[in-house]
Length: 234
Image 1: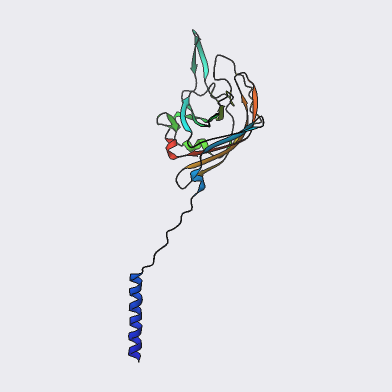
Image 2: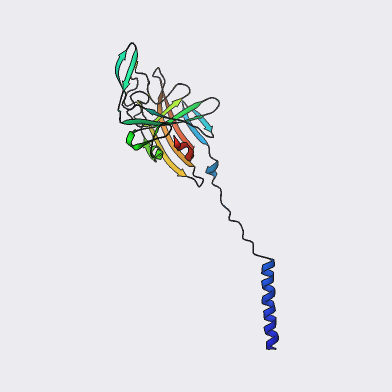
């Protein structure tokens, strides 16, 4: 009897092993939950005179530039203006233009860097471009395009209104130093997704001016920018 029991047990183990070989366990694939932000697009919204504007585009970055910081007129010869400024520094800016069929808004991030802290790409750029996008408040650079002294943010709208003054040295500055005293631009988050894409979000309000120095109040501003690593080569 003991021998029969042993043989029976051995056969059971044999058949169990055979079944395992014939029917291997199939591991269920790991489900990776998609982040809806991977499908986000550049977007900006704001209200002026009680009218809300919403603009969106899939990818909006289109320019980076170098300017002369602390610009001033050295001389005027035969109606030509000769400008000088700091020689060991560069004002670096990145412009994101977001638009729909009717309107366009340029959002410009601005900061002056010592040339020794920059690298040569297509133009001079900071070694760490992400420095422009750290979370926190920014001032409006009301002298952008002219004196180029102030760091911060500038906004320009397709209807001729903008947050900064005239860029021409042929006329005196039109905006007072406190033109944006009660305005605010704050980067509220800068998130890196699994794909390596960055999502920047900001909220803002501002005064905007045209060439006649007429003003409007911009309220309830919201900005979202979708930035890939490729964007940061400029």
